[in-house]
Image (cartoon, rainbow, N blue to C red; front, side, top):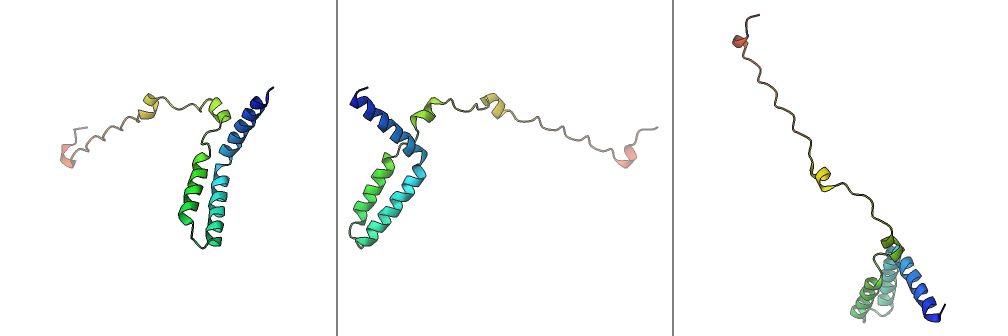
Amino acid sequence: MSLMDTLKGLVGKGKEVAAQNAEKIESAVDKAGGVINDKTGGKYSSQIGKGAAAVKNAIPIDAPAEAATPPAAEPAPAEAAAEPAPEPAPAPEPAPGDQPPA
């Protein structure tokens, strides 16, 4: 196995881990940006915001391992669109004088 193959494998594993922990990474980026912004007195807030946004955009959304698994079965469109038949309207009750002879 060559060095390039090894590096590609490590990058792939890193992307998978980053995708699985995207919320934690984004939270850490926000926290670090806040600390840096406080330490610099807000002097570089626009650059810090741009850097944080760039880091968040670099986080992969779907890991390759997740993409390989088949998606869960979804109901067919005809089944999803089918609605139960409406109940028939009740028959009108006869007026007291309209009773048939017994």
